[in-house]
Amino acid sequence: MLWGSSPCLDLAEYAEVGDGHLNILIVSAGDTRHLLQTMAKRYKRSYTKIRFYVYEPVVDMYARHIQQIALALEPVDRMSLSYKVRTWMELYGNTLVKPNTNSYLIKKSAQLIDIITDETARKHCLPIVQLDALKYKERDTIETIFKYWKNNNGFNITLMWDKRVRKYLGTRYDHRNNVFDWDLHMTLHYIDGGNRITNREYTYWRDTGVAYTFLETDCTEPNYTFALALLKDGDKITAIDYFGDIINGPFPSFGLDCEDDDMLKMGNMQPLKRSVDLTERNLTRMFYEIENQKPYKHKGKTDNLGVIITELPKVKIQEVQVTSPQVKVTSEHYSSINVSDVEIHFIPRTAMTDYPTFDRFKNFFDIMYCGHMYFEKMNVDITSMIKDGAVVLMETRKFIVNYKKKQHDEFKQKLIDLMKNCKCVSSEDIDVVKNATSTFESIIHIIVSSSLSVTPESRLLMRAIALPGFKPYNIYYKIKNKYINLNMDLQTFGHINLVVLHFWLDFRSFWIPSIYLNGLDPWRFIYSTPITS
Image 1: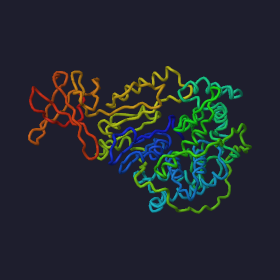
Image 2 (image 1 turned 135 degrees about the horizontal axis):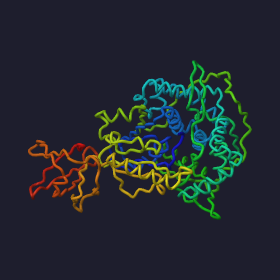
Image 3 (image 1 turned 45 degrees about the horizontal axis):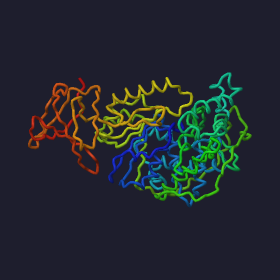
Image 4 (image 1 turned 135 degrees about the vertical axis):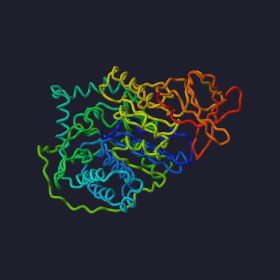
């Protein structure tokens, strides 16, 4: 929860090049990193509209998603780029934030309440976000979270974090710095890219929950966006506990790589830039490109802003949350950065069971991303919503600390078996230790047989594999504009020579096969989902 476990991706990069609409399904990503990165890089392509459909099994996560999007789209006349980046980082990955950051969250929460409850306010302030698919109960949950942020009635995140660490370490708590150091050097630094995370920033985060530290900052206020498990009693709202990550950290999302080579220099076999510095540069580039739709070029030459804070600020830890007098906050209505070619749809908790039954979502999505926390719930009904040949990106557990080789091997086998059942195949060797995501392609309607051959000029590689439930077939061939059903078992009808032709239809690439039978002219056929025997 709270953040993902893999670097941000430009999801549109995995789609067929086109200029129509691009529909992307993001399942249990944990944050908005892929969404924002895809928005930032859209200037490289010419899609008329990019539609994101965001699903989280815990609806409370939508509150943080909306807040992250709203902050990323703050207009420059309201907030400078550098201030926006650091504010976003603090709210994203720190248990404690600066007083100014907390003041911003209070004011912004008042606006977010209007956005979730008033359609007119949403269209004016944050039109990119679409909430009409959510149920009223789910909207009420999100509104409750925004109210808790705005009221600022007390959130003992420091105590909650310490309790979680004590429970996890047990008798090792008194030697926790040694445990943190071991996890870093014996696990994270052995992962490709993990050596970008320095010892001080990782151990400090494990001890305090503060991941991002900057020059001359004093983080003393609790980060209310970490409060997702809330208990409502009348008008009183109380945070139950902190249920987020305390082991892996938010560093992999933006802090392991950079387009600027100078940020990746090494000295004495140690990185000269912290993961925090890489995160700041990457977010600066991302937010700049979202607004300006052109490549970002860093102008600074000697900028090296950032110090390591080695002690937790003196924060009074209270056993009981104390309600302070509420200060009336006025909601400010102003428009976000104009991103008219993007829509972000938040879908309800029941979407993964309901949407596959809707005709409008059959073969609808061009790309699907699934986080590692949800992969075991993937099924053929969900993949029926993606188009033939569409890309399915499955997050691996590469950056999970304390994940052993045996666990990686078990995860890999489960992933392979699961995706076979979902009628998806990988276009590359699956390596869950080396790659943060594994790429699959949907082949729900592609006929596969061990005796099948493909012409060299075909642009589609058809792999001879055995998929469960793929015999017998319902095949239809066309004669004089009539479709006639021809049932066949390809294992006994093995002399089919398949020719794949490439067509463009409705700005999308479709593969239309033709059958040559006994030297006759090709009968172009359409194919339906195979019947499971």
